[in-house]
Length: 192
Ligand SMILES: CC(C)(COP(=O)(O)OP(=O)(O)OC[C@H]1O[C@@H](n2cnc3c(N)ncnc32)[C@H](O)[C@@H]1OP(=O)(O)O)[C@@H](O)C(=O)NCCC(=O)NCCS
Picture 1 (tube, protein in one colour):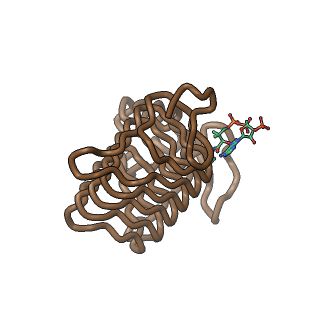
Picture 2 (picture 1 turned 90 degrees about the horizontal axis):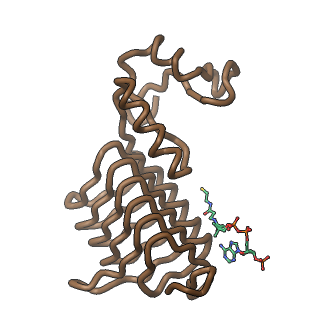
């Protein structure tokens, strides 16, 4: 039992039949049969896979659950769209908006007026300063920092961008880029 949620089983499409934390790991089909009214939580970060699995679960009539850790600090004016996975020790500040099927992983800080598009994944310890707009399907690497924009002119990260571990983003990033380093530059030097 965590945050009022009773975990009944784990599901893995590739490896099942063993115990994890005393619970049997099931196939998807077996879990649907055993727990038809359970809510499903996607606990892995790979973005394309998350999008695909969410769609196939919905197609199978499964209902998705949202988890907000009791140790997360979420401002009353922040909007969190479902399904959401907001992990321990995260901070989501005033006016922020977190899209559907987003993970905010341990200790990440989402400052005021940050907008995060659906299916994005914010890794542990990332810091996103105020007035930043992040597109859909963006992976913010572990410990990355994104500098603030200003009110009325958000710093903008396009769809499907990958921000490398430990990068410090100080400029807008065009869609589909992979940026690394301090300050962050596109790997092919054609961006930021
Ligand atoms: C940016 C990233 C996606 C690139 O992955 P990749 O395409 O497999 O890159 P490689 O590991 O082949 O590295 C290619 C080059 O980039 C460098 N590099 C990779 N990631 C880097 C990073 N975050 N910062 C600086 N340089 C980096 C490597 O040192 C290597 O340099 P070299 O060619 O001079 O040896 C990946 O390294 C990364 O940072 N992922 C984020 C991981 C993360 O946050 N995980 C959290 C899970 S909860």
